[in-house]
Image 1 (cartoon, rainbow, N blue to C red):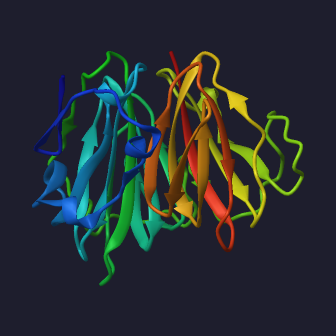
Image 2 (image 1 turned 180 degrees about the vertical axis):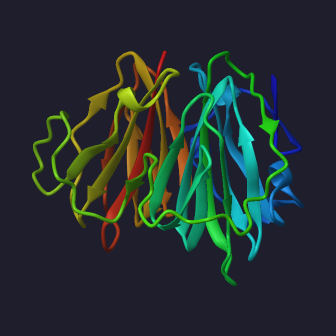
Length: 276
């Protein structure tokens, strides 16, 4: 059993034998809890933990999800033993990395390497839907050093001078994964060179209606999946489960996974890979 301490809340997580369908976890607002001022941020947000370190064997630490309320935010802070990646699912925010701030519109990812300061402010009148993935140097261990800076009113750079990746553009290249169904787009957004921990990749897969991926066995890595859009099914080592928008699940090293789109419209999934 592990306890994850983050943003002033404690999540206790325990591993147990589960069916594949039980491993599919929804991002359910009914589970959100209020954080009044995360890392001395501008104002409140609602959030919860979905996947924790005890759910996987790698040094993946957590997947948090929630809403940053209007005029709320996450204060300027450092992590020295973990790397995070913020995902803006909807809305926009003034995002800061190492003291440089730019307006970032969803859908977008912003990685935060070891020792880089970061924070964000939702300056709009609408809630900002948000995810946060983290990988640690030591399994189950995190840290934070707050700077007492809510970043409200920070000067904006017109062009971001930090790494980020848009999730709404046609990929410029396919990934190295071999795929027999040419309709499936499977590509790499960020590779291991971006990170300092065992974080290996950030991939996105887009499946049109009626399409499916080839089975793929994970070798030397684990993956955490988040369904950005659509619905479908996953098959892992012969067991099948349904997935839909805002579901998350993890796949262990050695398991073989395939994904199919049996719904309407595109099925879009974000994939985080962590080396063992």
